[in-house]
Image (cartoon, rainbow, N blue to C red; front, top):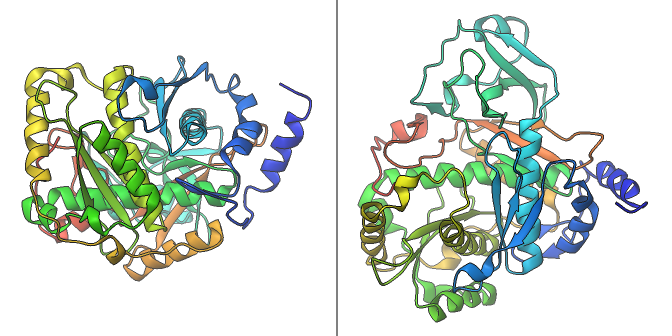
Length: 424
């Protein structure tokens, strides 16, 4: 590590809550370029156990940049992925995903082991009824569990949230009262500033909410959301579509933006042979509709490369067998057969000149729909200086991962009478 690294980290820390302007607009909007982000934070790799950043783009035939980050002593998954329009974007994406998960594994903030009934007598607690739930357990307000304090992103007094929705330490044994809430990384993000991290964490929650409602909606919801690729005027998006076409792959796009009004897109990529790589999905949410679609298109390429590499330790072996591959490919072809119904410019666009401005507009959309408790737990370590936020929102749907997952329908799904989706 060079002598200037501590100064760079101190500078990053000083900016964690600043309303800095967007200075980079590529496959994402950031207040630093990918090169500047790597310069500031890559020296921290050893401290976080990141041993390798590998360019795995060439494992597939598409050519959309994909990187992987290896962290062998992880307490969750040891391999993280990243994607982007350029190799540097993909490298930063993989590194930051590994870094934020490490922060979630090594929480040192004060915790309380107490029941909801006891905690709510003297402290403000998030509305538990609106939180995502797991099929693996039941929440008992009289059961003692671990809680951690967070701050509402729209302002106000702190709120306590279940640690299970914040921690990414999945090593056994789990604390008592576990499994009432899903254990995943939904709503965890890092950034050059805390506002940047919080915005991207919140966008992930909105993306998973929209995807869950859309997939649970079945055939009619799927067909109604099909996007006409000819309506896409973005040069960047059309360039990515050309990559898929040259690789001989079929692509389907859907505008799955929910009633919240924050742009969310889904992308399915499928081979024309049942014996090739199985179909994969990508999704993206961002205040800027172009970036949301770019993220969906690049994530689909990332998913394929991850499948090909076989290094992701949360891909169960059964997902690679012939029957599973055939089922996914047949489902994908059914999805791809839907005629286009929507145009790209019909999607909302909330993007502005600053990260904090985008965050404010997104929070305003949620509040207008009754989602007012959006809480950020600051996982930033002062001695490290890399901003990390875990956002927990009461009222948004959890991440539906297909039949057999631990997903339990929440209030938004139940209010719509939605059942099981059709693509695991």
